[in-house]
Picture 1: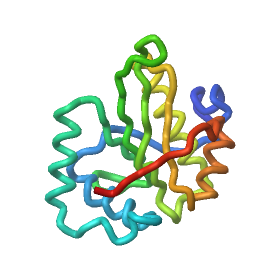
Picture 2: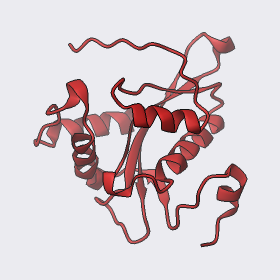
Picture 3: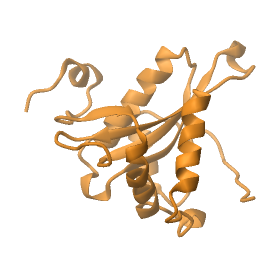
Picture 4: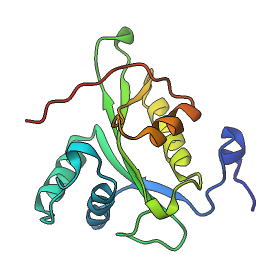
Length: 169
């Protein structure tokens, strides 16, 4: 199958017909379902059926402008159908001479579509958006139990650099 110039340039596998774009409200239920299906640790059973809090959060994200929920769709998928998702936030701070950092969270690929290059394409997309924003780095956290995800991130060039801590409030 033919590769796009972008796929050749980044040495990533082609993801035929993959489109990554900001999510719309119609995508929120599919994102919640994907997060629930991929839940690990303290997040297991935490996603709720009532979409109102998710839609409220989505509207706050869109209104604030520094966090964007992106969805990945394969050819033929429409609103409400997704192959994957991630949130990208631009963080301002004083470190790195005041240059912004980007943080990616809630990276999820439909379990039936894993190991086909979709995660790599989504992360490459996130990196490009971060560069466009002048970010000095892209950071992420991953649940300690997700060893397969850790191997993936290291394979695509991320360093295991920090020990993270969380406190559920």
